[in-house]
Image 1 (tube, rainbow, N blue to C red):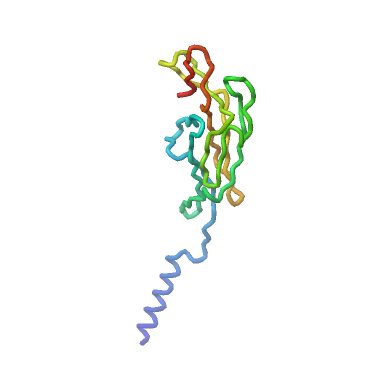
Image 2 (image 1 turned 180 degrees about the vertical axis):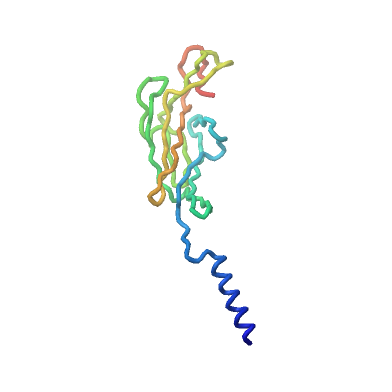
Length: 166
């Protein structure tokens, strides 16, 4: 009988130690990315009705990562100008919207924040004159920003045949 009690006690202690008793798992940071975007590549919201999907993750101190896209809130800052009009970019919900699932959709008024550095649509090098900076917030944490240039309008840049962006 004593061996059974000792074995049961030993198994209980091992179980408590292996479950991390006494440690807490809490959020260490929040990160955001654009689904389908590769690394540091530039994204582009193309055409009226064009979409991009945001993904927001809570990164826990234990290494666990949990998708919190549907529970995050988003702050958007317009930066720069529409290349066609040289006017400041309008604040959303003009130009694009973000819904509760993190889906970004291009809407009117259409803008073009890209310009060709070569002036030739066949060999264009591209730069942008404006973008929208988006930061996600979840449980008091702010994510890394993402920057989204827009190509929902045709370009009026000379010789570009309406092409706006890569």
